[in-house]
Length: 216
Image (cartoon, rainbow, N blue to C red; front, side, top):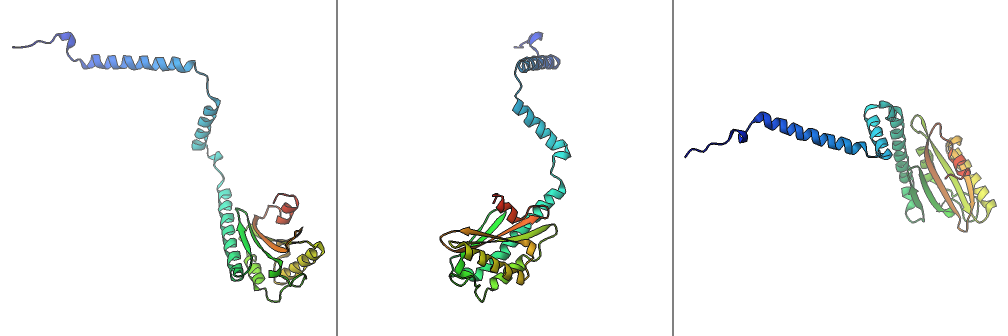
């Protein structure tokens, strides 16, 4: 038996395309009306604008020289920490020394007896570690400088002042650049010596000035 399909129900590609476009246009009109009544989100708008600017506006990209300077400083910080750690590693064994570091500073704290004869301002006769410290600070990369701050803490401020002066004279005699050295004293029950190391760019304030301003 032959079955006939009415012409109206036969597949017509053109009719299907027209119907699809019609439905799409209706949906588009619906979303246009829906968004027209919505309040804009300022945060999302700013985020979109910032994203477009970051992608297409080269002025919002950090300058190449700034990136290069930051990388050079980070490399210098790593190199200085390694040199100072190597300098103190032979004397850390058997002594109550503490070595700490953060993104900018490195500290070496030791009992005053590691550097001075007990209760005096007389440096111990053999302190080769100070020669290694001076050597580590001798040659900073171009555009950067190394600085050292010596802080003497003790309950006797007069002794602390004398010890800091003796330490400064000894470091300068060993060849440390005077501009790279700062001194400080603190009142504390336990006598200690703290050496603070930092890498600075040529246009940054000296470590001593920053500490005096209370921004350590």
